[in-house]
Image 1 (cartoon, rainbow, N blue to C red):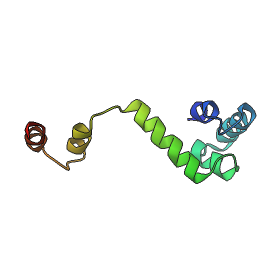
Image 2 (image 1 turned 90 degrees about the vertical axis):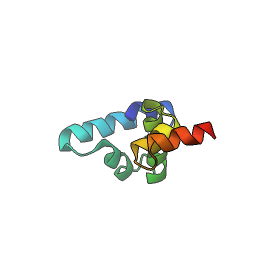
Image 3 (image 1 turned 180 degrees about the vertical axis):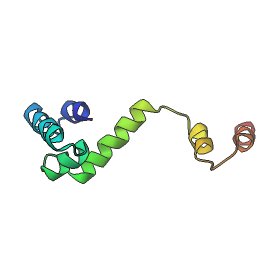
Image 4 (image 1 turned 120 degrees about the vertical axis):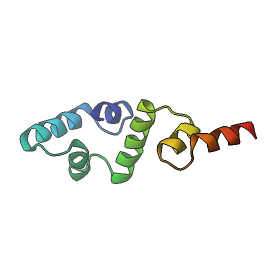
Length: 82
């Protein structure tokens, strides 16, 4: 996540290093530290986490709906045939 914040320009390399140092010292969550140290807002963090999830999980809408038990595979097939 720190890499993504750096790449997107939300944090400087120096800030990332400070967060990593603090995480090593305290064992606390990196995302929480970023917000508490004032380097990113909760809103920016949420947006970056969403982007990170999208980068790792490229699924079609039907697959997501089935995974979350919102529709059945049969309902998806029926909708696709419609």
